[in-house]
Image 1 (cartoon, rainbow, N blue to C red):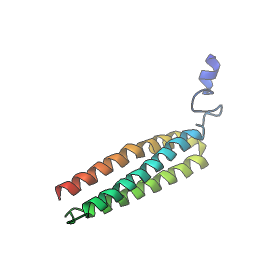
Image 2: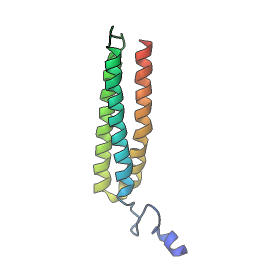
Image 3: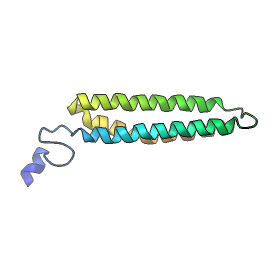
Image 4: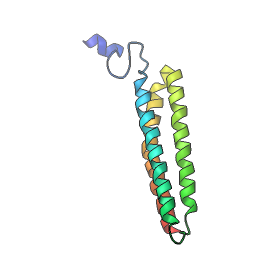
Length: 117
């Protein structure tokens, strides 16, 4: 058992030391879905902001939506890099997981900018 732990044959890495593909697919899929859900949130906020009298800070919603599209594109690039380069999967997995809180922070920032305008 000790030899298996020393060689890295358990956990996220296989026998070769490179992380397995699911360590990239799972966070990339969740991150892409999260960006898509936040884009729906931006669309709903845009409709609500222009319902009767347009809010003065509506432009920030467009900037926020563009930022979410950029994060979704980064997620796809990270997925491709992680699939093609097995030894980069650790950094790619961390990057893919970090896209989720960054997307939420971007959403909150855009909402606060709209409210202050």
